[in-house]
Length: 428
Image (cartoon, rainbow, N blue to C red; front, side, top):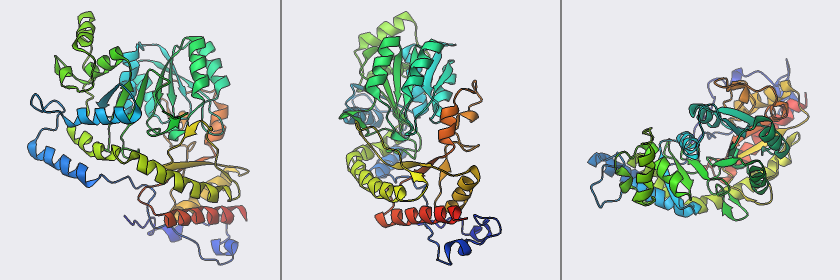
């Protein structure tokens, strides 16, 4: 897992100050370099690999391939993730974005409806809104990346939107009790995007229970890694039945789902009108590699928490860096860390990123021109001009992964690179 980054062109990188060698700025002190990649994904446990190979040898990768009486891997994974998150139902799909799309369809969003959502999130969220034929209405974020509740209520009133997706981007949880109150006041129905908040608790309860449907992801950089995949979670019988049919449980294949409402719920829906089959099912292969990872979630949460404290303390001791605090109601899952750059010009920020990347620490700015988390790039829908607050924040908000495969000493090296890079730039 040791990867040497940028070695071929490191010597050609421009110094942080024009015409001033790095050594002159740092007093000829040797620079620290990180030789492991921050882009490492969590490996699949051996049990998952063995089960996936067994399934491939038998050919039964489709979730409905198993003969009657033999529970499929997807159903088993749905039971296990529903138990972990304390939901009644879980519906496995081929991606977290598919979960959001079908959640919107199930909850009743129609073509042309307006759907509120975070201005600070990943492009998959507004893409799902557009995919459902709806129009995104964006809400500003605060310095700690959560929803600006004053702007949320203002947008509820001015847009008339009756739907809301709250995205817990990078596991940052907004004041959910206050949001529930606003939704009740303005008769808005809520979905929670929990792609980054698997394992995150609000007052001891798993995220997702404030909305009618929660959507989690098992894309490679999430707490569960199946390459692509996701689960929609709900306690509502009709919503669960609709999503099961939508994913591709045609005819009576819904009966092969272990976690499902009674047959009468499905047949009542079909009697009204047979829903579309969007064919967004999770495969048995994806479920096979997910299942053993569910068993280690809490163990990994504790490891991430300890490492986050180690990194947070070092970054907060670095000039021009502030790591925002989460709300006290939140039990975090810290597989990434975000921090704000303060009292720096755009040129200094660019030089800082160039320095860290040249020394093996791959950082990114959420508001960078090509970043898929920059709302300016969501041109498949109306690009808003009213998000100056969010734009100002994400232009100096830095994203950094904390890979499970690292050792504690690797994070010390990472923090040393960040500190030295800041010193090199700011001493100019």
